[in-house]
Amino acid sequence: MKKKIQFSLLYRDMWQSSGKFQPRKDQLERIAPVIIDMGCFARVETNGGAFEQVNLLAGENPNDAVRAFCKPFNEVGIKTHMLDRGLNALRMYTVPDDVRQLMYKVKHAQGVDITRIFCGLNDVRNIIPSIKWAAEAGMTPQATLCITNSPVHTVEYYCDIADKVIAAGAKEVCLKDMAGIGQPAMLGQLTKAIKDKHPDIIIEYHGHSGPGLSMASILEVCKNGADIIDTAMEPLSWGKVHPDIISVQSMLKNEGFDVPEINMNAYMKARSLTQEFIDEWLGYFINPQNKVMSSLLLGCGLPGGMMGSMMADLGGIRSTINNIRKKKGEEELSMDDMLVKLFDEVAYVWPRVGYPPLVTPFSQYVKNIALMNLLTLEQGKGRFVMMDDAMWGMILGKSGKIPGTIDPELVELAKAQGREFTDADPHTLIPNNLDEFKKEMDENGWDYGKDDEELFELAMHPEQYRNYKSGQAKKNFLADLQKAKDAKLGSQLTPEQLSAFKHAKADAVVAPVRGQVFWEFNGEGECAPSVEPYIGKEYKEGDVFCYIQAPWGEFVEVPAAMGGKLVEIGAKQGSKINKGDVVAYIERAHE
Image 1 (cartoon, rainbow, N blue to C red):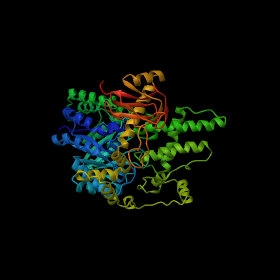
Image 2 (cartoon, helix red, strand yellow):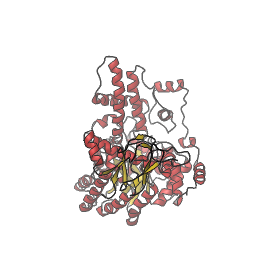
Image 3 (tube, rainbow, N blue to C red):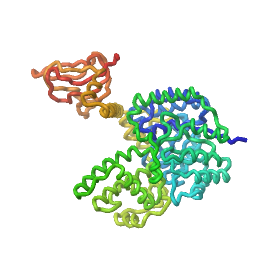
Image 4 (cartoon, rainbow, N blue to C red):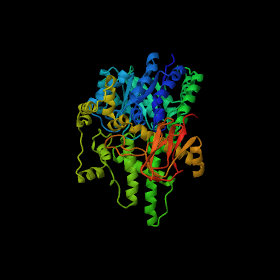
């Protein structure tokens, strides 16, 4: 009898591995029925990880988005799943127990079936409490093994972790090959070892395509008993993201596995919709390099999803290093030179900090230590002299037990700086604080939301939620979007062409008199300064756009032309302006 393989569509991770933002609620509502029509997915990754945070950053409500996206899948029996960072829950730093417990109640109520719980250090103490809380809330807890390739990350090492999380109540195990550097043969051996001992446990494989091993890995895990394979789809498959469902389905079908057929008409429609979302706004925050595979990733072990930010960081450090080299009369380094140096330095640092799996946030910590080492070595100061508390926290054990051994040099350096190592259970170091956020909600008159989901968002993402509630997040986002659009245009056009393009569909609002520009008088609150409006603000025909105080003292109202969206400001709050000067440009709403 043919072995049956199911597929999951990583609609959240496709976006996170490509760029900064996630689709809006209205876009998710449009794509969900088409994903269902494809007929090949038993599961869809709907949320988790950075999903909620970037919704808030875009001025959107993530709770509305999760509920709306999950609902159609719930109705047809497609399982929904989320990414859960264990001790860090949905963010990049530690979360108290009471907030983590609330998360599972909220997400289950919103329609999320499965939570994929991982710890970047594979410390079961960060996973087991979440297994218990998720099960109590009615969710299926899927425990995760973060796959990497080092002398300590053996089949036996991973099997020991699998035994512990299964004993704690995990119904499923995910092999999370987040950098795509897991060796196919080892992954096959690991899958077989877990299945031989725990035949009823569901195994799901998650691999990234960056270094080029993922298709071989998928074949190996399927031959050895894996049940579910994570996939992506065009236009966000391949590169440093995930293999495409079409290729995975074809390979497994021809190998003799029982796999579902793909409705290609629906696939093409979903592909077209996703491209539409990219073209509308999401593409302005996608790094083109994330569409490029690179075997160089095998050497450093860093996840493909962080290559964009790494290259930006490397460019900044390169400039500083080349200034130092120039003063010393040495030849400047190219970006290729710097990249090789960084990969070599990561290879030097990684074993010395105990081989933490290179997944969020530890991949960032290791990369940043290596990056700072390149700078301080060039300065003649040696290594490990520019490390912040987060980096040290990883080394000292505050985030969990490091898999390997910390280098004696770092042990001595910690002692010299008065830092102490700990083997305490990480979650016991974090006091509960949900009551503080309840108090804040009460004082502001904010509703806790359905199933306490708004309280949860504040407790999970305090700064981002406050900015969302005040409206500042939406203002910041629209300004960032306009900058991104300008930057993209600016890379293709001369300044004159850029200006002409931006203003082609816009009306110039001109000053009717000479004087001083006032956009507002009291700001948006008692203590808020008076400033110019944010880019993207909408005006109706006849709205007051701004005021100009004429030389004789009169405040002259300037109307918002025919209305529309503010795209450029030519005069700051309080600035002097002549009659006929352009105050701003408004993109017409009627076009």
